[in-house]
Length: 130
Image (cartoon, rainbow, N blue to C red; front, side, top):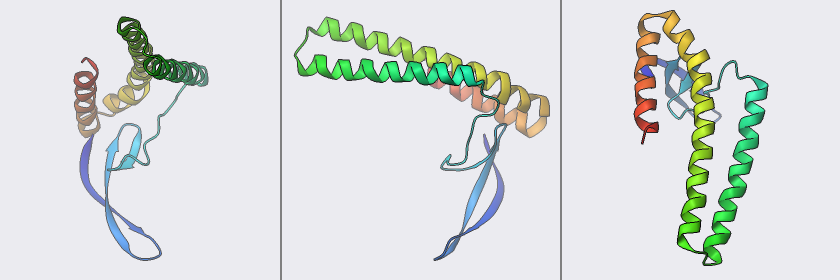
């Protein structure tokens, strides 16, 4: 994602300010990321991801209880490993959707959008291989 240098004028009741508009294949968004939305998300995949994330939320609450109850460290670490794998599973689904839709569209568009997407994908890979 690159700063295209374009500026969008925004106004509120008290004052106006310049906002830098940054573009990616998914559409324009401001630097805070407030307007970024996924494109072409399959409703079934979204429902599965939400269900997985709710299950993970329950696992994390269970971890908190295990710590509060002074459970055996190795048991807690095993559960932490399970949460990590569950999160990686959701991440793989999201990456697949991003590659299939957002990245494919940007790369097909060529030029600046493709270059920005290549940079974004490299950054994502380095962040998520740890």
